[in-house]
Amino acid sequence: MSARMDDLKFLAEGVREACIAAAIEAYEDGGIRGLCAEGRFEYAVSAIRQIDVDAAINRMSKRCGNHRGTADVVSNSGIVDE
Image (tube, rainbow, N blue to C red; front, side, top):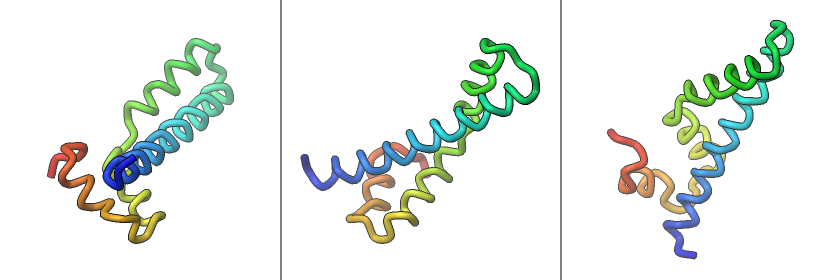
């Protein structure tokens, strides 16, 4: 796997982590609010749709410090429009 692909995989894993965290939090919150299973699922999907992908990418960039070329890969990949 190339260095660029490693960087993109690292970022994708970060966005996936953000999606999972948002879904779990919303599903649990939906249960507390008394939603049925279907309602909790819809609430979780809505939370995923509302994730700020730019913020998730920025968190991953900070977490990795100077992970090889992360900022360059993101700006040159078309993942984020600037």
